[in-house]
Image 1 (cartoon, rainbow, N blue to C red):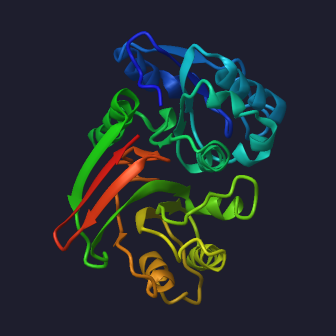
Image 2 (image 1 turned 90 degrees about the horizontal axis):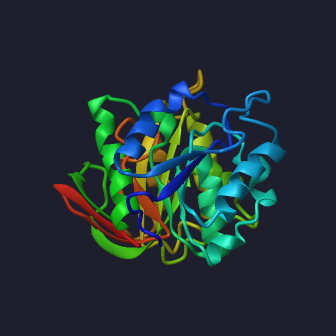
Length: 299
């Protein structure tokens, strides 16, 4: 995978919800501070209902970034909804001969999954320009994204949680937003989890939805042969008037209790301020013990 150097060009695209120039200013300054040249997609500031342009316009921006050999990283400006509408209309095959980073999280998961499934190339699950600002709690997210793009390597040590399951695992890291993994199941973009370390996270879901999505992964055989499971932020979960009876952590644990591999909860990635970068499709070594969790992730 290409490691970014000063003067390299990165292109910001908006394949999902619309965005404004003001919302990008901090990110543009941050990227330019690294010496990178920021290219703005032709339809980046478009508007078509909730989207940043029509499907055709959003495909054009994504395709132009993929096809341009001078672009070394494609940064999705924000999430929302939209990637599923265009993923089958984009030709990702030029990445085989001219690999570049695809960066983002949330809705970007559909592109991560598709690239892993079809091309077996690494991508970067990381914060996006819409989330970038001067808040100190977001700084580790910014720095980890930059580190990954420049070095292709990440290393973390975080406090353990009482509901973690101890162990050591090595493998290729796959995953992303649980709702999107559920959405691409049994499609051309579906990921292979056999012998892999799976990462999941989600936001603003009902607890019974989490149960249903985990059951879908389990019934599809995606939980049985994992090397490990990493659970990031499960943020702003909702319950019904009649309680489901389990929280998100308990639901996930109930669906992997019969399998013997390490499980890590509350890893700092996902829809949280401290959204650390992860190299999906990269190699990972995970160590979970009673006191800490260490993760090494590299191309």
